[in-house]
Image (cartoon, rainbow, N blue to C red; front, side, top):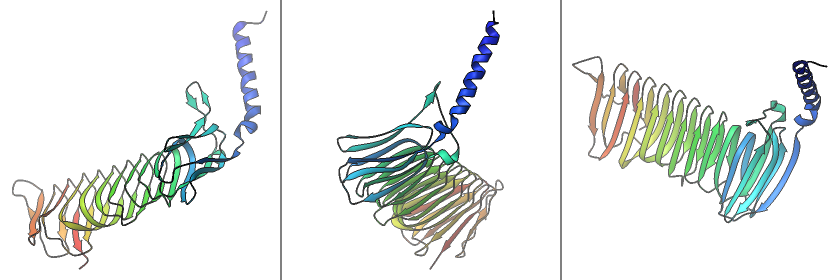
Length: 308
């Protein structure tokens, strides 16, 4: 009689061989072409997608999903519930863990949505592009880059992906946070929140009413105007700030401080060193405006400039 342990090992090896032989079939991608009617100004959600996805606004009252499904995907569910349309990518599961095959087998989708839709996307290991979507956007990725254009409110979060955002003049609220990705923002105005841990930021925006920029070690270059009663706050541990006021130095109260970094301006203001330690501070009032500018760093440098 065969030893039970030996028999178990033989069955395990046989199973592994069969799995290896089945690999080419399992790894194959397959095309997808799904369509559902949708409201012209409804909501579209994209869930649990790994791979690459492009979202494009168009003038049809429907959501269309085309492209290829990767080998890790069991099926694509495209469903409607009231004004909400959901694109859900369902992956194969084994003992609670999803399969992840090679890059050549990844899911690549183009999702067309009515142009006035609002969009919410939650992706893992996926790059996301968004263009031509006029509604509000809420975009989340883990290990994926985001490139988007926005016409209204936009909120973006990534863990380890870069963010590139082009905002229209009606985009009055921008919130972006990332752990290790870089941020590039152009356009938009009103309220701005940008936060990174180690990523750098380049922000070129319009007139801000409220702004809060926070980083641990990333460097930020910011070009903006400030509303008459606006508030601008920036803080970092070791990151540098280069801030340029496009319309000239705004009439505002300025308060800049750093424990060990340098504070400087392009318009003649000089920092003073604290009498009780190594820190330096630059505080002054420009004009009679009620706006406020506050920048606080531990070891980062701060430079203020104006274009006029």
